[in-house]
Length: 89
Image (cartoon, rainbow, N blue to C red; front, side):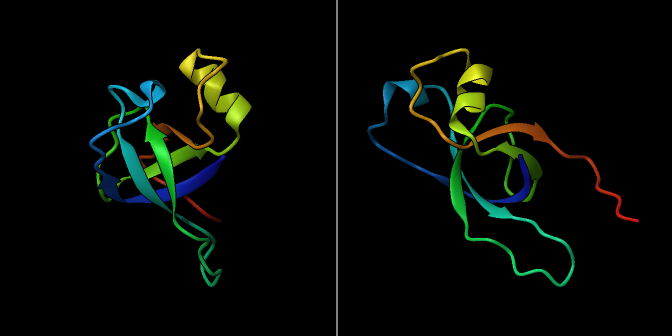
């Protein structure tokens, strides 16, 4: 699981059946202050997240398929939560 920021949406005219009724969002990984952020990636949305939201992303296919309750889903990254706040001490 990683924290990320939603940067945008991906619009497709044709999508895989496992993606029906779900959006693909562009995610920028978040790191600690002074850390270089990782590369942006796409994630399937299961939370109705929007641009600018901080989200919790499951980046492991088996766990994502469990959340979707579809053992055959072709998904690796799935947004599983919208984060209200983060506190670092």
